[in-house]
Length: 500
Ligand SMILES: Cc1cc2nc3c(=O)[nH]c(=O)nc-3n(C[C@H](O)[C@H](O)[C@H](O)COP(=O)(O)OP(=O)(O)OC[C@H]3O[C@@H](n4cnc5c(N)ncnc54)[C@H](O)[C@@H]3O)c2cc1C
Ligand code: FES
Image 1: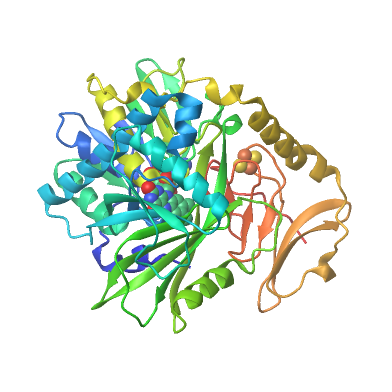
Image 2: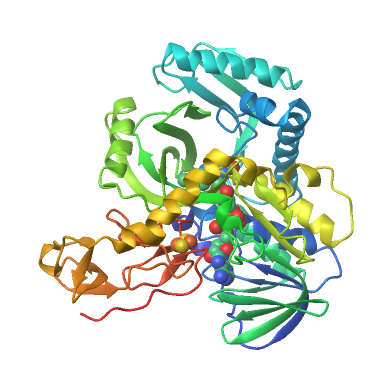
Protein backbone atom coordinates (compact mmCIF):
# COMPACT_ATOMS: atom_id res chain seq x y z
CA UNK A 1 0.00 0.00 0.00
CA UNK A 2 1.40 3.33 -1.06
CA UNK A 3 0.93 6.76 0.48
CA UNK A 4 -1.07 9.51 -1.17
CA UNK A 5 2.19 11.48 -1.48
CA UNK A 6 3.87 8.69 -3.45
CA UNK A 7 0.82 7.95 -5.60
CA UNK A 8 0.27 11.63 -6.41
CA UNK A 9 3.85 12.17 -7.57
CA UNK A 10 4.50 9.13 -9.77
CA UNK A 11 4.36 11.31 -12.89
CA UNK A 12 7.08 13.60 -11.43
CA UNK A 13 9.59 10.81 -10.79
CA UNK A 14 12.83 10.93 -12.77
CA UNK A 15 15.02 7.93 -13.40
CA UNK A 16 18.35 8.03 -11.61
CA UNK A 17 20.88 5.28 -12.37
CA UNK A 18 22.03 2.70 -9.87
CA UNK A 19 25.71 2.70 -8.97
CA UNK A 20 27.61 0.55 -11.46
CA UNK A 21 31.23 1.64 -11.07
CA UNK A 22 33.65 2.76 -8.37
CA UNK A 23 33.68 6.48 -7.63
CA UNK A 24 35.53 8.98 -5.47
CA UNK A 25 33.71 11.94 -3.90
CA UNK A 26 34.13 14.52 -1.17
CA UNK A 27 30.77 13.72 0.40
CA UNK A 28 28.76 10.50 0.18
CA UNK A 29 25.18 10.83 1.41
CA UNK A 30 23.52 7.50 2.16
CA UNK A 31 19.73 7.75 1.89
CA UNK A 32 17.49 10.00 -0.20
CA UNK A 33 14.80 10.88 2.32
CA UNK A 34 14.36 14.47 3.44
CA UNK A 35 17.63 14.51 5.39
CA UNK A 36 19.67 13.18 2.48
CA UNK A 37 17.99 15.31 -0.17
CA UNK A 38 18.08 18.54 1.84
CA UNK A 39 21.77 17.97 2.61
CA UNK A 40 22.44 17.37 -1.09
CA UNK A 41 20.54 20.53 -2.01
CA UNK A 42 22.48 22.62 0.54
CA UNK A 43 25.81 21.17 -0.68
CA UNK A 44 24.95 21.84 -4.31
CA UNK A 45 26.14 25.44 -3.90
CA UNK A 46 29.57 24.31 -2.69
CA UNK A 47 32.48 23.12 -4.84
CA UNK A 48 32.38 19.68 -3.27
CA UNK A 49 31.78 16.54 -5.28
CA UNK A 50 28.74 14.82 -3.79
CA UNK A 51 27.00 11.48 -4.45
CA UNK A 52 23.72 10.29 -2.93
CA UNK A 53 23.17 6.53 -2.66
CA UNK A 54 19.57 5.39 -2.16
CA UNK A 55 18.44 1.81 -1.57
CA UNK A 56 15.03 2.27 -3.23
CA UNK A 57 13.57 5.34 -4.85
CA UNK A 58 13.74 9.05 -4.00
CA UNK A 59 11.70 9.89 -0.87
CA UNK A 60 9.95 6.54 -0.80
CA UNK A 61 10.56 5.59 2.81
CA UNK A 62 9.50 7.49 5.97
CA UNK A 63 9.55 11.02 4.47
CA UNK A 64 7.27 9.87 1.66
CA UNK A 65 4.86 8.26 4.10
CA UNK A 66 4.56 10.80 6.91
CA UNK A 67 1.70 13.25 7.54
CA UNK A 68 4.10 16.08 6.63
CA UNK A 69 3.15 18.82 9.06
CA UNK A 70 5.93 21.39 9.26
CA UNK A 71 5.65 22.56 12.81
CA UNK A 72 7.39 23.31 16.07
CA UNK A 73 4.32 22.01 17.93
CA UNK A 74 5.38 18.46 18.74
CA UNK A 75 2.26 17.41 20.62
CA UNK A 76 2.67 18.48 24.29
CA UNK A 77 6.44 18.72 24.61
CA UNK A 78 7.70 22.02 25.96
CA UNK A 79 6.65 21.55 29.59
CA UNK A 80 8.46 18.17 29.50
CA UNK A 81 11.47 19.76 27.81
CA UNK A 82 11.77 22.62 30.32
CA UNK A 83 11.59 20.12 33.19
CA UNK A 84 14.01 17.64 31.67
CA UNK A 85 16.51 19.91 29.88
CA UNK A 86 15.98 23.43 31.20
CA UNK A 87 14.41 26.58 29.78
CA UNK A 88 17.33 27.59 27.56
CA UNK A 89 17.38 24.21 25.88
CA UNK A 90 13.62 24.30 25.30
CA UNK A 91 13.93 27.79 23.84
CA UNK A 92 16.65 26.62 21.45
CA UNK A 93 14.63 23.56 20.41
CA UNK A 94 11.59 25.71 19.62
CA UNK A 95 13.62 28.35 17.79
CA UNK A 96 15.45 25.70 15.73
CA UNK A 97 12.11 24.27 14.58
CA UNK A 98 10.66 27.71 13.83
CA UNK A 99 13.80 28.56 11.81
CA UNK A 100 13.53 25.27 9.93
CA UNK A 101 9.91 25.98 9.02
CA UNK A 102 10.98 29.36 7.67
CA UNK A 103 13.95 27.81 5.80
CA UNK A 104 11.63 25.34 4.07
CA UNK A 105 9.26 28.16 3.12
CA UNK A 106 12.20 30.22 1.80
CA UNK A 107 13.47 27.31 -0.33
CA UNK A 108 9.98 26.72 -1.76
CA UNK A 109 9.63 30.41 -2.63
CA UNK A 110 13.16 30.78 -4.01
CA UNK A 111 12.96 27.65 -6.16
CA UNK A 112 9.27 28.16 -7.01
CA UNK A 113 8.43 24.60 -5.92
CA UNK A 114 4.83 23.56 -6.45
CA UNK A 115 4.29 21.28 -3.42
CA UNK A 116 0.92 22.29 -1.96
CA UNK A 117 2.68 24.24 0.77
CA UNK A 118 0.30 26.22 2.96
CA UNK A 119 0.41 28.07 6.25
CA UNK A 120 -1.85 26.47 8.86
CA UNK A 121 -2.76 26.79 12.52
CA UNK A 122 -1.77 23.77 14.55
CA UNK A 123 -3.75 22.48 17.56
CA UNK A 124 -3.24 19.93 20.32
CA UNK A 125 -6.62 19.27 21.87
CA UNK A 126 -7.99 17.69 25.06
CA UNK A 127 -10.79 15.16 25.50
CA UNK A 128 -10.81 15.13 29.32
CA UNK A 129 -10.38 17.55 32.25
CA UNK A 130 -7.07 15.86 33.06
CA UNK A 131 -5.80 16.43 29.52
CA UNK A 132 -7.01 20.01 29.64
CA UNK A 133 -4.86 20.57 32.74
CA UNK A 134 -1.83 19.31 30.77
CA UNK A 135 -2.71 21.63 27.93
CA UNK A 136 -2.92 24.60 30.29
CA UNK A 137 0.52 23.68 31.66
CA UNK A 138 1.86 23.51 28.10
CA UNK A 139 0.44 26.94 27.30
CA UNK A 140 2.26 28.38 30.33
CA UNK A 141 5.46 26.55 29.36
CA UNK A 142 5.38 27.76 25.75
CA UNK A 143 4.61 31.34 26.78
CA UNK A 144 7.55 31.23 29.19
CA UNK A 145 9.74 30.60 26.11
CA UNK A 146 8.54 33.93 24.68
CA UNK A 147 6.55 32.16 21.97
CA UNK A 148 3.04 33.20 21.19
CA UNK A 149 0.44 30.48 21.62
CA UNK A 150 -3.23 30.46 22.62
CA UNK A 151 -5.55 28.43 24.78
CA UNK A 152 -8.79 28.02 22.80
CA UNK A 153 -12.04 26.38 23.86
CA UNK A 154 -12.89 24.85 20.48
CA UNK A 155 -11.29 24.09 17.12
CA UNK A 156 -12.51 24.40 13.51
CA UNK A 157 -12.48 20.58 13.15
CA UNK A 158 -15.78 19.14 14.45
CA UNK A 159 -14.19 17.17 17.28
CA UNK A 160 -15.45 17.11 20.84
CA UNK A 161 -12.90 18.95 22.93
CA UNK A 162 -12.64 20.75 26.23
CA UNK A 163 -9.88 23.00 24.92
CA UNK A 164 -6.74 23.16 22.84
CA UNK A 165 -3.36 24.85 22.54
CA UNK A 166 -3.00 26.66 19.23
CA UNK A 167 0.25 27.56 17.43
CA UNK A 168 -0.47 29.97 14.57
CA UNK A 169 1.59 30.23 11.41
CA UNK A 170 2.66 26.59 11.12
CA UNK A 171 2.71 24.80 7.75
CA UNK A 172 2.11 21.66 5.69
CA UNK A 173 3.04 20.38 2.24
CA UNK A 174 3.24 17.36 -0.02
CA UNK A 175 6.66 16.06 1.10
CA UNK A 176 7.35 14.08 -2.07
CA UNK A 177 6.59 16.94 -4.45
CA UNK A 178 9.06 19.02 -2.40
CA UNK A 179 11.69 16.25 -2.24
CA UNK A 180 11.57 15.38 -5.94
CA UNK A 181 11.90 19.05 -6.87
CA UNK A 182 14.89 19.55 -4.52
CA UNK A 183 16.47 16.48 -6.03
CA UNK A 184 16.10 17.77 -9.58
CA UNK A 185 17.56 21.14 -8.62
CA UNK A 186 20.53 19.54 -6.85
CA UNK A 187 21.07 17.10 -9.75
CA UNK A 188 21.14 19.99 -12.23
CA UNK A 189 23.84 21.64 -10.12
CA UNK A 190 26.04 18.54 -10.34
CA UNK A 191 25.03 16.28 -7.44
CA UNK A 192 24.99 12.61 -8.50
CA UNK A 193 21.98 10.60 -7.33
CA UNK A 194 22.01 6.79 -7.47
CA UNK A 195 18.84 4.83 -6.73
CA UNK A 196 18.39 1.07 -6.22
CA UNK A 197 21.82 1.23 -4.61
CA UNK A 198 22.06 -0.44 -1.23
CA UNK A 199 24.99 0.26 1.03
CA UNK A 200 26.09 -2.90 2.78
CA UNK A 201 29.29 -1.87 4.55
CA UNK A 202 31.26 1.22 5.55
CA UNK A 203 34.95 1.01 6.43
CA UNK A 204 37.34 3.67 7.65
CA UNK A 205 40.43 4.39 5.52
CA UNK A 206 43.10 7.08 5.63
CA UNK A 207 41.35 10.44 5.21
CA UNK A 208 37.87 9.04 4.93
CA UNK A 209 35.69 6.04 4.26
CA UNK A 210 35.10 3.22 1.79
CA UNK A 211 31.42 2.60 1.17
CA UNK A 212 30.40 -0.73 -0.34
CA UNK A 213 27.29 -0.64 -2.50
CA UNK A 214 26.03 -2.81 -5.38
CA UNK A 215 29.39 -4.60 -5.72
CA UNK A 216 31.10 -1.22 -6.18
CA UNK A 217 32.97 1.03 -3.84
CA UNK A 218 32.79 4.72 -3.11
CA UNK A 219 35.73 6.55 -1.55
CA UNK A 220 34.51 9.58 0.40
CA UNK A 221 36.09 12.10 2.77
CA UNK A 222 32.76 12.73 4.52
CA UNK A 223 29.79 10.38 4.92
CA UNK A 224 26.28 11.41 5.94
CA UNK A 225 24.23 8.51 7.31
CA UNK A 226 20.84 9.80 6.20
CA UNK A 227 19.40 6.29 6.43
CA UNK A 228 16.75 7.13 9.02
CA UNK A 229 18.04 4.46 11.46
CA UNK A 230 21.87 4.36 11.36
CA UNK A 231 23.11 1.30 9.49
CA UNK A 232 26.44 1.29 11.38
CA UNK A 233 26.22 -0.48 14.76
CA UNK A 234 29.67 -0.04 16.30
CA UNK A 235 30.79 2.32 17.68
CA UNK A 236 27.82 4.62 18.09
CA UNK A 237 25.60 2.02 19.77
CA UNK A 238 22.43 3.74 18.55
CA UNK A 239 20.61 0.43 18.94
CA UNK A 240 20.95 0.93 22.71
CA UNK A 241 19.60 4.47 22.54
CA UNK A 242 16.59 4.23 20.22
CA UNK A 243 13.58 2.19 19.24
CA UNK A 244 11.11 2.47 16.36
CA UNK A 245 7.41 3.12 16.56
CA UNK A 246 4.89 2.41 13.80
CA UNK A 247 1.83 4.48 12.83
CA UNK A 248 -0.98 3.94 10.34
CA UNK A 249 -2.39 6.62 8.07
CA UNK A 250 -5.45 7.01 5.82
CA UNK A 251 -6.46 9.66 3.28
CA UNK A 252 -10.20 10.13 3.09
CA UNK A 253 -12.69 11.75 0.77
CA UNK A 254 -15.19 13.04 3.34
CA UNK A 255 -17.64 14.39 0.71
CA UNK A 256 -17.81 17.55 2.87
CA UNK A 257 -16.11 20.92 3.00
CA UNK A 258 -13.15 20.64 5.33
CA UNK A 259 -11.78 23.32 7.64
CA UNK A 260 -8.17 24.47 7.52
CA UNK A 261 -5.78 23.51 10.30
CA UNK A 262 -3.67 20.65 11.65
CA UNK A 263 -4.80 18.76 14.75
CA UNK A 264 -3.62 16.12 17.19
CA UNK A 265 -4.99 15.02 20.56
CA UNK A 266 -2.79 14.96 23.60
CA UNK A 267 -2.90 11.34 24.81
CA UNK A 268 -3.06 7.81 23.41
CA UNK A 269 -4.68 6.72 21.22
CA UNK A 270 -3.38 9.75 19.37
CA UNK A 271 -5.15 10.84 16.21
CA UNK A 272 -3.42 13.35 13.96
CA UNK A 273 -5.43 15.25 11.31
CA UNK A 274 -4.63 17.52 8.40
CA UNK A 275 -6.01 18.13 4.93
CA UNK A 276 -4.40 18.27 1.51
CA UNK A 277 -5.65 19.63 -1.82
CA UNK A 278 -7.13 16.89 -4.01
CA UNK A 279 -8.49 17.80 -7.47
CA UNK A 280 -10.92 20.62 -6.68
CA UNK A 281 -11.54 19.51 -3.08
CA UNK A 282 -9.56 18.36 -0.05
CA UNK A 283 -8.64 15.00 1.36
CA UNK A 284 -8.61 14.47 5.11
CA UNK A 285 -5.48 12.71 6.32
CA UNK A 286 -5.66 10.89 9.63
CA UNK A 287 -2.76 9.13 11.35
CA UNK A 288 -2.93 7.07 14.45
CA UNK A 289 0.02 6.33 16.63
CA UNK A 290 1.32 4.02 17.67
CA UNK A 291 2.89 0.80 18.67
CA UNK A 292 6.46 -0.30 18.97
CA UNK A 293 7.50 -1.93 15.69
CA UNK A 294 7.37 -5.71 15.98
CA UNK A 295 5.14 -5.72 19.04
CA UNK A 296 3.16 -8.96 19.16
CA UNK A 297 -0.32 -7.51 18.82
CA UNK A 298 -3.17 -8.07 16.40
CA UNK A 299 -2.94 -5.17 13.99
CA UNK A 300 -5.90 -6.06 11.83
CA UNK A 301 -8.03 -3.29 13.31
CA UNK A 302 -5.50 -0.46 12.82
CA UNK A 303 -7.04 0.90 9.61
CA UNK A 304 -10.57 0.10 10.78
CA UNK A 305 -10.11 2.34 13.84
CA UNK A 306 -8.95 5.16 11.58
CA UNK A 307 -11.88 4.69 9.24
CA UNK A 308 -14.28 4.70 12.19
CA UNK A 309 -12.73 7.94 13.36
CA UNK A 310 -13.24 9.49 9.93
CA UNK A 311 -16.88 8.35 9.87
CA UNK A 312 -17.47 9.66 13.39
CA UNK A 313 -16.60 13.14 12.08
CA UNK A 314 -17.85 12.79 8.50
CA UNK A 315 -20.29 9.85 8.08
CA UNK A 316 -19.96 9.65 4.29
CA UNK A 317 -16.17 9.28 4.41
CA UNK A 318 -14.54 7.01 1.85
CA UNK A 319 -10.97 5.83 2.35
CA UNK A 320 -8.89 6.35 -0.81
CA UNK A 321 -5.37 5.61 0.43
CA UNK A 322 -3.88 3.80 3.39
CA UNK A 323 -0.29 3.32 4.42
CA UNK A 324 1.98 2.91 7.39
CA UNK A 325 5.48 3.84 8.41
CA UNK A 326 7.74 3.99 11.44
CA UNK A 327 10.02 6.52 13.04
CA UNK A 328 12.88 6.40 15.55
CA UNK A 329 12.42 7.55 19.14
CA UNK A 330 15.49 8.37 21.23
CA UNK A 331 15.51 7.60 24.94
CA UNK A 332 15.46 11.29 25.93
CA UNK A 333 13.05 12.17 23.07
CA UNK A 334 15.62 14.49 21.47
CA UNK A 335 17.10 13.80 18.02
CA UNK A 336 20.69 12.73 17.47
CA UNK A 337 22.33 15.05 14.94
CA UNK A 338 26.00 15.57 14.04
CA UNK A 339 29.12 13.48 14.58
CA UNK A 340 28.25 9.78 14.61
CA UNK A 341 30.98 8.92 17.12
CA UNK A 342 34.02 10.69 18.55
CA UNK A 343 36.28 8.02 16.99
CA UNK A 344 34.86 8.16 13.47
CA UNK A 345 35.59 11.69 12.25
CA UNK A 346 33.61 13.06 9.30
CA UNK A 347 30.86 10.45 9.65
CA UNK A 348 27.55 12.16 10.47
CA UNK A 349 24.15 10.99 11.63
CA UNK A 350 20.63 12.45 11.84
CA UNK A 351 17.99 10.33 13.54
CA UNK A 352 15.57 10.00 16.46
CA UNK A 353 13.02 12.53 15.19
CA UNK A 354 10.11 10.91 17.10
CA UNK A 355 7.66 11.54 14.24
CA UNK A 356 8.54 15.24 13.96
CA UNK A 357 11.32 14.94 11.43
CA UNK A 358 10.04 17.19 8.66
CA UNK A 359 11.33 20.40 10.23
CA UNK A 360 14.11 18.41 11.90
CA UNK A 361 15.39 17.12 8.55
CA UNK A 362 16.08 20.75 7.66
CA UNK A 363 17.73 21.48 11.03
CA UNK A 364 19.86 18.34 10.70
CA UNK A 365 20.94 19.07 7.15
CA UNK A 366 22.04 22.59 8.09
CA UNK A 367 24.01 21.35 11.11
CA UNK A 368 25.77 18.60 9.15
CA UNK A 369 26.46 20.66 6.03
CA UNK A 370 27.83 23.48 8.20
CA UNK A 371 30.16 20.97 9.87
CA UNK A 372 31.39 19.74 6.48
CA UNK A 373 31.93 23.30 5.27
CA UNK A 374 33.68 24.25 8.53
CA UNK A 375 30.99 26.76 9.54
CA UNK A 376 29.53 27.28 13.00
CA UNK A 377 25.91 26.32 13.61
CA UNK A 378 24.12 27.72 16.66
CA UNK A 379 22.03 24.54 17.12
CA UNK A 380 24.85 22.01 16.88
CA UNK A 381 25.29 21.59 20.64
CA UNK A 382 21.59 21.05 21.34
CA UNK A 383 21.25 17.81 19.41
CA UNK A 384 24.76 16.35 19.73
CA UNK A 385 24.52 12.69 18.74
CA UNK A 386 27.46 11.69 20.95
CA UNK A 387 25.81 12.90 24.17
CA UNK A 388 25.62 10.31 26.94
CA UNK A 389 22.45 11.58 28.65
CA UNK A 390 20.04 9.13 26.96
CA UNK A 391 21.79 6.07 28.33
CA UNK A 392 21.80 7.67 31.79
CA UNK A 393 18.02 7.22 31.70
CA UNK A 394 18.37 3.89 33.50
CA UNK A 395 14.66 3.08 33.51
CA UNK A 396 14.22 3.45 29.72
CA UNK A 397 17.57 1.81 28.99
CA UNK A 398 16.66 -1.08 31.32
CA UNK A 399 13.31 -1.53 29.55
CA UNK A 400 14.97 -1.56 26.15
CA UNK A 401 17.59 -4.09 27.21
CA UNK A 402 14.90 -6.25 28.83
CA UNK A 403 12.76 -6.23 25.68
CA UNK A 404 15.77 -6.97 23.49
CA UNK A 405 16.79 -9.86 25.74
CA UNK A 406 13.32 -11.32 25.31
CA UNK A 407 13.52 -11.22 21.53
CA UNK A 408 17.19 -12.10 21.39
CA UNK A 409 17.23 -14.99 23.86
CA UNK A 410 14.03 -15.88 25.71
CA UNK A 411 11.56 -15.95 22.80
CA UNK A 412 14.05 -17.91 20.73
CA UNK A 413 14.25 -20.60 23.42
CA UNK A 414 10.48 -20.98 23.59
CA UNK A 415 9.11 -23.80 21.47
CA UNK A 416 6.34 -22.66 19.14
CA UNK A 417 3.05 -24.51 19.72
CA UNK A 418 2.16 -24.10 16.01
CA UNK A 419 2.87 -26.34 13.03
CA UNK A 420 2.44 -25.73 9.30
CA UNK A 421 -1.21 -26.85 9.46
CA UNK A 422 -1.94 -24.06 11.94
CA UNK A 423 -1.03 -21.32 9.45
CA UNK A 424 -4.25 -20.05 7.90
CA UNK A 425 -4.80 -18.35 4.56
CA UNK A 426 -3.20 -14.89 4.42
CA UNK A 427 -1.55 -15.51 7.77
CA UNK A 428 2.05 -15.51 8.99
CA UNK A 429 3.34 -17.45 11.98
CA UNK A 430 6.48 -18.83 13.55
CA UNK A 431 6.14 -22.60 13.58
CA UNK A 432 8.16 -25.56 14.78
CA UNK A 433 9.47 -27.87 12.04
CA UNK A 434 11.96 -30.69 12.66
CA UNK A 435 12.98 -29.04 15.90
CA UNK A 436 13.67 -25.72 14.17
CA UNK A 437 11.75 -22.45 14.26
CA UNK A 438 10.60 -21.28 10.87
CA UNK A 439 8.62 -18.23 9.78
CA UNK A 440 5.82 -19.06 7.35
CA UNK A 441 3.41 -16.87 5.45
CA UNK A 442 0.59 -18.61 3.54
CA UNK A 443 -0.80 -16.40 0.78
CA UNK A 444 -4.36 -16.18 -0.54
CA UNK A 445 -3.69 -19.02 -3.01
CA UNK A 446 -2.43 -21.26 -0.23
CA UNK A 447 1.24 -20.97 -1.27
CA UNK A 448 3.71 -20.80 1.60
CA UNK A 449 6.83 -18.62 1.92
CA UNK A 450 9.44 -19.69 4.44
CA UNK A 451 12.11 -17.61 6.18
CA UNK A 452 14.39 -18.01 9.18
CA UNK A 453 12.73 -15.63 11.66
CA UNK A 454 16.02 -14.23 12.94
CA UNK A 455 16.71 -10.55 12.28
CA UNK A 456 19.74 -9.88 10.09
CA UNK A 457 20.62 -6.84 12.22
CA UNK A 458 21.53 -8.26 15.63
CA UNK A 459 19.63 -11.52 15.71
CA UNK A 460 16.33 -10.83 17.51
CA UNK A 461 13.31 -13.02 16.81
CA UNK A 462 10.88 -11.45 14.33
CA UNK A 463 7.11 -11.25 14.52
CA UNK A 464 4.59 -11.17 11.70
CA UNK A 465 2.71 -7.94 10.98
CA UNK A 466 -0.63 -9.31 9.84
CA UNK A 467 -1.82 -6.07 8.33
CA UNK A 468 1.20 -5.11 6.22
CA UNK A 469 2.30 -8.73 5.69
CA UNK A 470 5.84 -8.05 6.78
CA UNK A 471 8.24 -9.65 9.24
CA UNK A 472 9.03 -6.95 11.83
CA UNK A 473 11.77 -6.85 14.45
CA UNK A 474 10.75 -5.78 17.97
CA UNK A 475 14.31 -4.82 18.92
CA UNK A 476 15.17 -1.92 16.60
CA UNK A 477 12.44 -2.00 13.97
CA UNK A 478 13.98 -3.66 10.90
CA UNK A 479 11.29 -4.95 8.55
CA UNK A 480 11.29 -7.59 5.80
CA UNK A 481 8.79 -8.63 3.14
CA UNK A 482 7.37 -12.16 2.94
CA UNK A 483 10.35 -13.27 0.83
CA UNK A 484 12.74 -12.00 3.52
CA UNK A 485 13.91 -8.96 1.57
CA UNK A 486 14.86 -6.10 3.88
CA UNK A 487 12.56 -3.09 3.53
CA UNK A 488 13.50 -1.08 6.61
CA UNK A 489 16.85 -0.49 8.24
CA UNK A 490 18.87 -0.84 10.48
CA UNK A 491 19.24 -4.30 8.87
CA UNK A 492 20.98 -4.22 5.52
CA UNK A 493 21.01 -7.93 4.68
CA UNK A 494 18.00 -10.01 3.63
CA UNK A 495 16.74 -12.86 5.84
CA UNK A 496 18.05 -16.37 5.36
CA UNK A 497 15.65 -18.63 3.49
CA UNK A 498 14.30 -21.69 5.28
CA UNK A 499 13.37 -24.85 3.43
CA UNK A 500 10.04 -26.53 3.92
C1 LIG B 1 3.23 8.02 10.51
C2 LIG B 1 4.22 9.12 10.62
C3 LIG B 1 3.80 10.43 10.45
C4 LIG B 1 4.73 11.46 10.53
N1 LIG B 1 4.28 12.74 10.40
C5 LIG B 1 5.14 13.75 10.57
C6 LIG B 1 4.67 15.10 10.52
O1 LIG B 1 3.48 15.36 10.32
N2 LIG B 1 5.59 16.08 10.71
C7 LIG B 1 6.89 15.81 10.98
O2 LIG B 1 7.65 16.74 11.21
N3 LIG B 1 7.36 14.56 10.99
C8 LIG B 1 6.52 13.52 10.79
N4 LIG B 1 6.99 12.24 10.82
C9 LIG B 1 8.44 12.00 10.94
C10 LIG B 1 9.19 12.27 9.64
O3 LIG B 1 8.43 11.86 8.54
C11 LIG B 1 10.53 11.54 9.67
O4 LIG B 1 11.19 11.79 10.88
C12 LIG B 1 11.45 12.01 8.54
O5 LIG B 1 10.74 11.98 7.33
C13 LIG B 1 12.68 11.12 8.46
O6 LIG B 1 13.43 11.51 7.33
P1 LIG B 1 14.78 10.75 6.97
O7 LIG B 1 15.35 11.39 5.79
O8 LIG B 1 15.60 10.63 8.21
O9 LIG B 1 14.31 9.25 6.68
P2 LIG B 1 13.74 8.57 5.31
O10 LIG B 1 12.78 9.44 4.64
O11 LIG B 1 13.29 7.21 5.73
O12 LIG B 1 15.03 8.43 4.43
C14 LIG B 1 16.03 7.46 4.68
C15 LIG B 1 16.43 6.83 3.35
O13 LIG B 1 17.58 6.01 3.53
C16 LIG B 1 17.46 4.90 2.67
N5 LIG B 1 18.32 3.82 3.16
C17 LIG B 1 18.20 3.11 4.30
N6 LIG B 1 19.16 2.19 4.39
C18 LIG B 1 19.91 2.31 3.28
C19 LIG B 1 21.06 1.61 2.77
N7 LIG B 1 21.61 0.58 3.45
N8 LIG B 1 21.58 2.00 1.58
C20 LIG B 1 21.03 3.03 0.87
N9 LIG B 1 19.95 3.72 1.30
C21 LIG B 1 19.40 3.36 2.49
C22 LIG B 1 15.98 4.54 2.74
O14 LIG B 1 15.55 3.77 1.64
C23 LIG B 1 15.33 5.92 2.78
O15 LIG B 1 14.94 6.37 1.51
C24 LIG B 1 6.10 11.18 10.76
C25 LIG B 1 6.53 9.87 10.93
C26 LIG B 1 5.60 8.83 10.88
C27 LIG B 1 6.09 7.45 11.12
S1 FES C 1 16.49 -4.54 14.21
FE1 FES C 1 18.06 -4.93 15.57
S2 FES C 1 17.96 -7.05 15.93
FE2 FES C 1 16.37 -6.65 14.55
